[in-house]
Image (tube, rainbow, N blue to C red):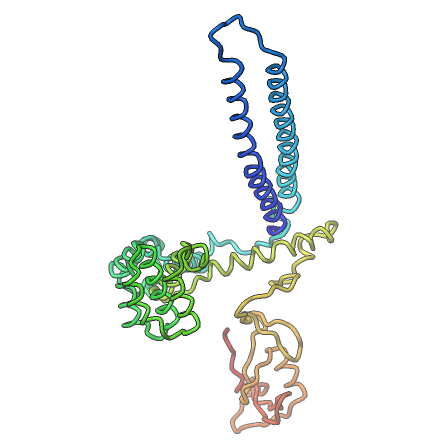
Length: 388
């Protein structure tokens, strides 16, 4: 959806750029022509002097050219306006403002203290991983988050490093990384490369050449950087090197390393954005069905490609059903995990081994059963609940 609208916006921008490049010199030439005609024909000491036939023809031709040009410009302007109006229609068509028919909310974050604390901790991690350390510190105190979910670093030190980096001084950040995160060699290299680029932007060519010895770990890229030193149009030839967005990306990476936190909130938002178009299409196909029919339990009705995916809910390999609080996953002696319901069903066909002095109420716990995946036997009492 975004790609469709973005494509139409790009076409409008290309049309406007073409309009400007085509008509700016044409209008300048026409203005110069009218000015010359005015100077040659209409400026006269005698106010009652009449134009000659030749002068009238020349003036009429100049005015006709001007009229034709304005008419063509107006025609192209109307075409551009039509393209612009289609963008608004595309937004109305492909974007849904009311997402209530696509969401299922059965948990109240405001009234559940446990969920409320999780959301606050999620926001805190987002703030710290994006360099907003002061805001995260205030939220931690006001939300009264536990110490384990608060900030685990010196805010003043981190603030000093980030302020220096925002001024494009990477020296404090490099020193901190070499002392505390020396394994993150890629980030250290990228910071050094960006400092090399800054020296070129400041016109310090010799200093950049001397500093390039820190970049010898990547010979292929080293060649490109050395060519950037001698190139006259280096910003045009190597736009990726001199892109200011690189500084913003490095700032986010540096903040994430310093805060030792992951930006899970951004991942959640990205997944939601990726998922909404499919939900809209599915809802349009099932317009006559209730919202509850789209969702079964806590499952989504569509497949979503999740990077670094991890199952937060265990599915029993025997019953092929997700485990719940009432039917939790249980670990057998051999290490295989099944649901509690599957454990009880297997126990019904197991063999009973009676220990001495066994109370009748505990007889079920001493039934031995064979694991469905290996020959090891386990007893119901030995099965332990697994928490994910």
